[in-house]
Amino acid sequence: VADPISGYVYVGSVGPRPNGGQIFVIDGLEVIGQFDVNSSVTAMDVNPKTGEVYVLNCTSDRELSLFRDGEFISAIRLGEECSKRNIAVHPITGNVYVVDYVAHEVIVVRNMKIIGRAPVGLGSLKMAIDPQTGNVYVANFDEDTVTVINGTETLASIDVGWYPYGIG
Image 1 (cartoon, rainbow, N blue to C red):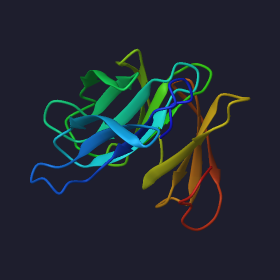
Image 2: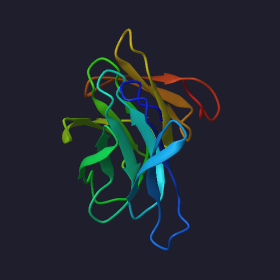
Image 3: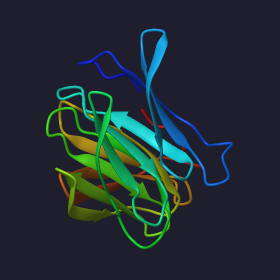
C-alpha cells in the first residue's frame, strides 16, 4: 500500500524465513525500514486521511499491526482463530474492517480496539467500502450474496448470483 501523507510504500512478504513474513518500508528507490511479523502478511490497507497503515497477519500475539511514518506503532489480537483474510479502512471514519471467514463476521476496529462485530455470510473474503454512504459490502462466496454493513450493524444480505468473489 502507498501512504499518501508520507509517500512511503509498504510491502508485505510471505517469507522465505521459517517463521514467515516481513514488512518493508520504501521511500522512493530505497528500503528505509524492515520489520519482522513472524507470519505471512495476509492483507494491508491505509487510512488516506492519517497515513496510518494496517497490516493483517497471523501470529500468537498479534493479527493487526499499525504503522505510521515508516515505524511500527502497535498490534492487537482479534480472536482465537487465525482466520482473518481481508482488511479495509473507511476513508472518512477511520474504522478498520476485518473479514473473519471462519467466524462469518466482520470485526470493526477503531483506535486499535475492537468496537463491534457484524455477521456476514459463508465464504466471506473480499469487501469494499462506499465512501459516500459509509456502507461496507462483503462478498459471500459460499452463499451467493453480498452483506451490507454500516458502522457495526449488518443492514442487509443481497442475492447476487453464483460465487461472488471480487468486489470493489
